[in-house]
Length: 264
Image 1: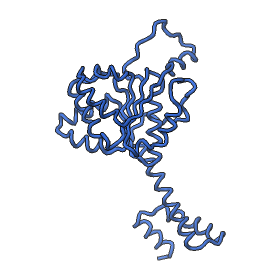
Image 2: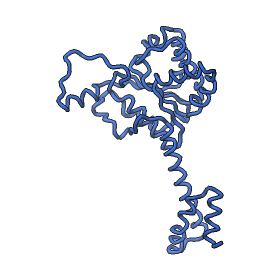
Image 3: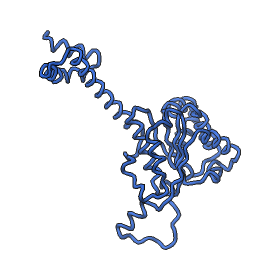
Image 4: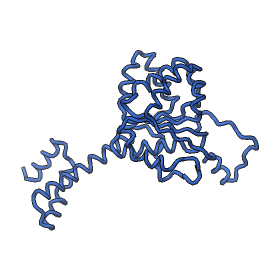
């Protein structure tokens, strides 16, 4: 067996495919630049490391469940005048995730809360942080199904507790039943001081009990845990979607339309 074949075989056995692929080019660069063996080997290891990081970022992004990819650079802070740009600049460092702190984005429909939530989540996946994005309605459906099938503990352990950052979008757009409210409480309680939660909502905190089956006591207990270590951003401004309709020349009704369920 030739030397290169033996090297390729060993790289394959050790799952070092990138090293095998980059070996000819790295070796050529090392010879041309008269690099030491240690420098050559370091460059080869760096190529393998870069490739693994890229594969990890791709996998984390794919499994996060983002409906689309958004970035903070794409967000129009000049339009959503109430969005605190400095706050999001600090959140983009992701230090809050390392400290197991929470983030709550409040504001009316259409101001870009979901965009900002996805942007922070995407930044997390690009930094190697396991992230999950889910709407409140889908989360309740999954929790209820798991409870009915007798595997709620397993679901909480694998899907709720495992991600370092859990993003729950559109809390407050649909009211929860008492069982659903209890499941949501368990979600927040399970992650308290163990993992970060980012929540978007169109409701001020004073109205959250209307979403949680009118149970003011449970809502207060949940908010106590959610807000103990939390960054709260109040976002104001006009709806992006209405702005785009105006740009397109679509006439809007004179009376302010009630937001549709599921918009954010």
